[in-house]
Image (tube, rainbow, N blue to C red; front, side):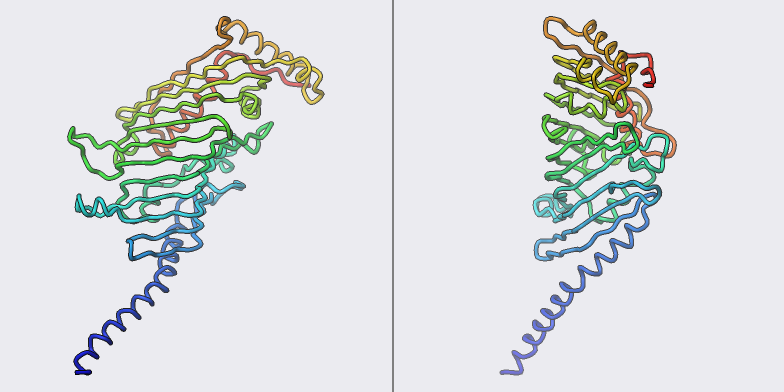
Length: 358
């Protein structure tokens, strides 16, 4: 009788030992595998500090992901993600009989850097196939990606003054990233996100795109409201050569691409704007007299162009071009066109360069 039951007992005990050994050893094996893959990312290099497995719920957690640029001396990482949680979608498994995953990035950070003429000091993501890298990091079909409390920053460390601006409290989701075709024969993934621009201005964005088209067909919308323009002074001074003394503004962006041809616009709407202030600009010894005269002209042009009854004015900059550009991805080309259009939106009224300060 005892012998009859001893075999199943030892079998179960052996399985338990094997599972415990796997639970201990597997995280280290997965971490080493990921670090080996992330070490070869073209112009970037990645590393994770730890991996936790939860086999009982079909999930694993990546801790301490950091991706940095290999060449050049960029002082901030391109991507920093303290926690990435990947789990199997039981709903899809049960109802659709498909093995797909849902991913949650907790407090991730994304840093873009404009290095000006020094391309090695720039950090835009150029030089890496990010779709392939995501496949290495998360080797399973993704249906939903969620970002919780993230940050996106734009830096220019070499400009005068240096520029550091961005969005915080980024909460966003990507849906339907699989290649499932809907009833109309379309294969549209969807993006919805909200954030605070410059720490205070509500920002919302949405997009639809084909996840397998290499960003050649998409629609994108973004709106930021109640921006305190003085908080943009570093950006305005570095790229537009003027400062805001007062005012608020909204920015609306709509863009769409069809067969890689981009169209759209950027439209800032500014209210109660003051650019030139005698005490701030003339009596400020850090500014030359020519810089002060330039800002006075800028301020005068705003008075002419604005809607006097509402004390506001707007400009509109058309976006156009091809997202197919040599040596960069379609998404990076779109960001480049968007960045150039945004700078132009705040400079569209001023055709002459700022006089040099003596």
